[in-house]
Image: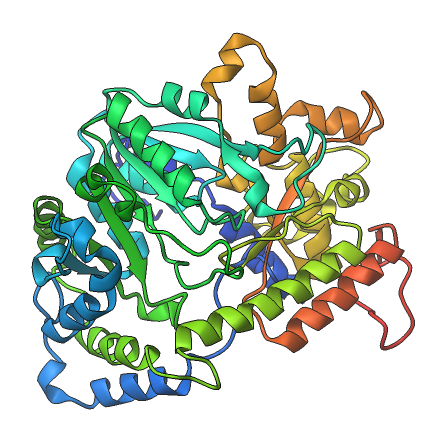
Amino acid sequence: MPSSPGFVLPPPTDRVAPLLAPTVWLEFTPLAAAVGAINLGQGAPSWPPPAFVTAAAVNAAQDAGIAQYAPPRGSRVLLDALSDTYSPSLGAAVSGVATGVVGREHIVVTVGATQAVQLALAAFVPPGGEVLLIDPAFDVYDGAVAMAGGVTRRVALRPVTGAGEYRLPASSREFGLDMTEFRAALSPRTAVVILNTPHNPTGKVFTVDELRAIAAAIDDVAPSAVVVADEVYEHLTFDKDLPHTSFATVSSSAGARCVTVSSAGKTFSATGWKVGWTIAPPPLSARIAAVQQYAVFSAAHPAQVAVAAALRAAADPYEGHPTYYAAVASDYRIKRDSLVASLTDAGLSPVVPDGAFFVVADGATVAVAGRPPSGGLHPAVAALSDAAGGRVSVAPGTEGRVDYQAARQLTLGGVAAIPLSAFGHAAPAAAAAGDGRGEEASRLAGGGGAHEAAAEGAGGAAPPVPVRFAFCHPDGVLAEAGRRLAAGAAAGWSIEGGAWRKKASRGEGEA
């Protein structure tokens, strides 16, 4: 910062200080761009919205009558569209009446789902109040807790069907909560529980029975806790035997304590529009609306009107499917299967997701190849870092972290991924009992010294090194990523001269 007589920059406040470290996105997005990698790290669809969505935006932008502020709760046309869309599924839950509907009093329109989470935490977390996250958890939650002045508590998803300590499960439905751990992580100090289903990054879709168990535990241990249910991937589930279930619907108490969060961004491939919403019983919704009017007052009015039109059109038949929602889920299932096949062929042992658009895979073999002889930060990354005048920002403490080494090696080889430890580490209550499950959770999240030792051949089979890939990309991009991954596997994941050391023949996967 330029010096100026009379001004001394104060130290950051306790709420801001945790936000100043570089995020994983400030490393891997510019790194991918710098080396020409296919960016399967960031979860933003790389195609335009459907034509009917774009047309709605054009029409809204040309309407001079909506060029000014919308009401703080949202444009009336969007509130009514949300009412019609969600009343069949959430009407009874938010109204407490079997024949109830979602009314305007239940809804607040926000600047994307991220702001919806921030508003909810600002509304319900007192200073020092605890917020329980289910690990691995989207990193934006940590920032929202910090800004609300809360304290983060964590509990781990873990394999529940005997996957074993040293491998990832084959399917996301094999992840689950140890309910003893979950109950131990709750307390009367718990102000908010954030529940994400379908889950980023694992793709887990929580079952009705799992959601009921969560609801019962909160009833027993933290009866004043609000549940913020982040359901932005609600339309992206892939198997008829495991549809999305909203947490608010599983019991009367769940409906009374739940703030359901969703948005238009993932569903309509319009993440830049930043239109989200909360749906909750009136006492909860009123507090969120009160915070909203002093935060940004209202979300962009034309975008709200366009989303309203898109929601109504999405219920109509689309490209041979009964609705647009059915079409987009079908498209994403094909993309999921394509990326899963490529990762399997490359020996990366993917976890097949039941929802969202991410695949977690095991980068243990890549991490071994990606570790510099001296340890620490890969020299090719160091040369591109902001410390060397580049644009790649490396978070302190991640230089030698094994899942970061795997993700860096993949990115340098031509396919960017995200290290799973960027989504947090859990410290389950069970770890205090000395049963080893806390160490296992750390391994599955991508951290812990056990990785390093096992990857060097000490102590038996290597633990997994989870990294996350996104399949929200055109089929041709996913196919090219598959060719690059195949070339990397053939090279033993070793890079030479900026490419995989042993290249496949031309047209068969040169990176």
